[in-house]
Image (cartoon, rainbow, N blue to C red):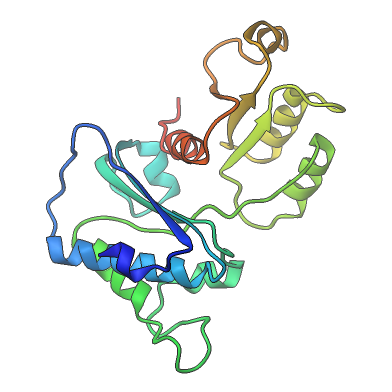
Length: 230
């Protein structure tokens, strides 16, 4: 069904969770959620791209629920729909689920697709929010400048273990001092002994080894964001 909704220049990838986690919801309504999100993703990728649908069994902690009120802590099934499209600006993110709000030209959209998605998810006892706005910096000093200039929350930093200039440990220390609760995901393509000598892998940290597929990175990012705070 989804394959017929999206154009041929869009790749469709699905990554179902192991163990087949279950939810109590109306099957037709969940299909409507997927269709609406797929159409929205297609419109964001006029030149083609990749649409990824993934499910996972997650535990939302008390700390996570406090950051995402009115979320109730507990076990949930995560349904993540991602695309490689143009993304949304801050204003659109804040209004994306409003009925009749649309960024399309007059006559090209009703502005009801995502509001219907929101209603179905809430009716089914779930929660929904848009994510994955990415801030890019090519070194540690620039990363600090970008973080200081950004007026919204920063949930996660993806950084190499070994970089020129300011060390990664100094970068993380400075970011953590001004962004309480920020999560760090380290990556490296160096051999294990070189990474260990950096001193960053002492203790339990979030780490992904290069090379990795985009889907593996997306899964790891979601895993880190869903972690309980110690």
